[in-house]
Every structure is written in structure tokens, then in C-alpha cells.
Length: 210
Image (cartoon, rainbow, N blue to C red; front, side, top):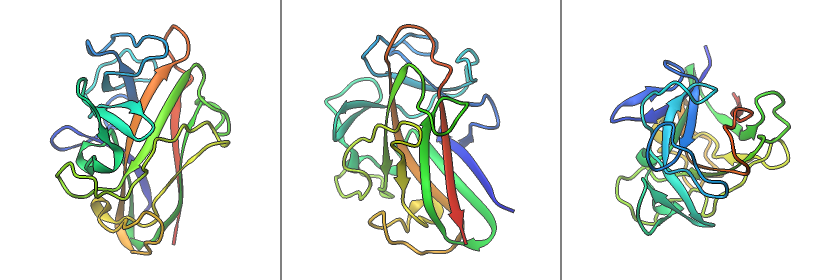
């Protein structure tokens, strides 16, 4: 049986589908704190679709510039390819009862109604991390720059067949490794375009397996 699930790293893998429904992006002060228009989130939490139910805190990666992010709330930033998988905002995990290849993997940011339409009132930056090591050195092979996904017009293409813990992702384009589990790791950062809570905002992931 095939399954696609979403996890954060809290010291152990925490399924965000086992509590509230997704991720919420908040200010530096913590859960419920606003993010100024045009600024980027300082804290990331598991929450419900309205951002009112507090769950565990996720790893926070804050957009800094085209090729860098800030881990946590403070710092001068780090290149995206130096961020290890374990510090990713979100781990997307596909499992199957037998070993299969995974290909044509897409991540979209949409309005929670139509996967072809972008989120309403918020700009999102996403980067795939391919860095199975635990040291922050720039030897990863994930995205060198952030991508700004918008419905079907701009999608994030994730590595084929990365295997368990993303170990076989390689250069991000040519793995054909078969496994019962494939893991993708992403950095996600969000900025409101206007005041108010943003609820027309979702993440969608699709893939083919064989």
C-alpha cells in the first residue's frame, strides 16, 4: 500500500498528520505572533488550518537572500546547500509495501481549493535540501537558490528516488534507486503580502512510482 506523509524533526520524527493539520509561520515571539507585511517568519509550528491550535515547533529556516537562509531566529545566514537534511523544515515521506522507484515528484503551494492556483496573500520560498551529513558544510546537492512556487505556474521539482533518509538522491536528478521508503527534505519560508491571517494557503505534493 502506498502512503505519502509529512514529518518535522523534534528530536524524533513527528507526523504532522497525527496532530493538527499542517505548518504555520509566526513571528520571533513564538506561536500566535504576527509576521510583519514583507518580513519573513521567525518561528514555525505544527498547527491547524486556521493557525489557532498549537502543536510542536518545527525547524525554522528564514529566507535571507536568493541562496541563503537563517536557521532559527538569529544569525548571519547559511548557504542552502550547507543545511543538513535534519535541519529541514519539512520531511516529505513516501512509503510502499514493496521497493519502488519514485519520479516526477512535484511540490506546489496553492490556495487549498485548486492546486493550479497560488496561495492567497502570502509569498512562499521553498528549497530542496540534499545533504545527508550532519555538518554545515557546503557540499549538499540540493537547490542552490530558493524557488517561489505558485500553483501550477511555478512548481518545485524534487529529486527522483532519494531512498530512505534521502541518502540516494545524489545530484538530485538521476537516481533510479528502488526502496520501500523515499524521503525528501525542504526548507520553507513565508512572508505575508498583506495584514491578517492567511488561511487560503496549502502545500500539495504528487509523484509517480513504479
